[in-house]
Image (cartoon, rainbow, N blue to C red; front, side):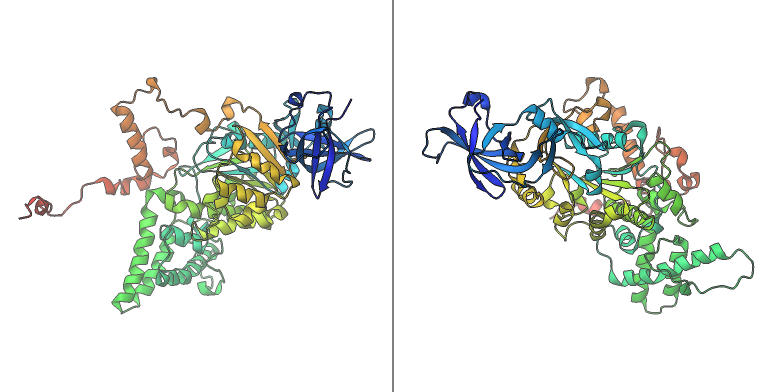
Length: 578
């Protein structure tokens, strides 16, 4: 059979192919268009290349060619009884080598699973009969990212990948930051779902920068107040340790300052001790303006302590108790007890505190991996990653970026792997995304995002990125270590029970059967108010878990009418201006 083309020029990782008019196939049947794989027969191997451009301009003078195509050289199939594919090209093609469209058998050789550690994520876009596999070890140990605009099936792709990973690695622990509360039902019995109602994350686990972020509501701290806090927190930790060690009556007291804790040591302390230490210092001052600073700091701590939205941090704040082992065991599933995955739903947390909560979780995940020498691997998946690790240093919370960055740079040495999911890769810290060696790119329309991708993709097939704006829904370009070749593939269908909520249930047409009457509105308001007050919400499963004493003392004071003010205080507004 006559081949359908010949090599007419070679330059670096690219070659130019003349498409022959004498081919037995009609040109329309050949479909030699961009994105198709071709095979170039060289002396010792079959070189695999991808067409990136087809043109009938500037053709060689010979009448044999009807068009010319630019191809990227990707790898080669080495012969023998069992053909094997390898990345990179050892023997370059020469002028006149024959070129053919790749056949299904050669595609299967390229994408054949090389070991048991492969997951099936879909099929090739070029040939749906060939299954696309991802090497799970390469994908996890060198981090991965899923990128794509809203509505292209990104969340569904994440659900598919994580479910396949759980199937293949039932003992790998996975921690997913779920920004929009959409993954709660995707993993069935294999995942524990955490939200502000059932999370216990004691305030003393926060380091100094994180607790300051909580106390000041995300705004920069007042320097004088920060100095006071930095001085008294280590002493409060020392006092708590004294309580714990004072088993025998008459035991010699140690000066709390001599214990040697820093503001960042993850050791329990009690808020009551912290406030009394600040109060004691305030009592020794005579200058009124200095005392105001101390007074402001105390009222700031009290306000946050009494805010019901922060109950997950400040429950039992004055009782103490070293619960760090229980918290880490609960958060990071050690032991897993059949639920190796945690879905952390962030949508219910106060907006001011989300950054510091994410910072604590990332930091603890990394530190636990570090101090356990990576014995129990963990995959940490960040949804909407550009929120926590923004490229702009002035946006977001510095410690969160630092914590995500540490996992990206050093996590693989300690068994902490990173999965990033974002719709705006250009807004993500470039250092972090460059550490993700497997990229699943879905449709992206923004020029800056595409430019960033070109710099992040090290493959010869960076030209493939010109397809990114025209990808269909569920279509993916996969690059990097996890896939045999830079590949255009289609994610397989996800079963309905594994669809994220945003894909599965919320339609723009309201349900007629829902009956949106006043009772419905009242029920929504009840939940809404319940999230920001100490009152118990009817039908709330978390009521039983909450201590009863708190609800009686503070019964939603912000909803009661204010007392003792002049009832005619608004009459001034009613008077005419002249």
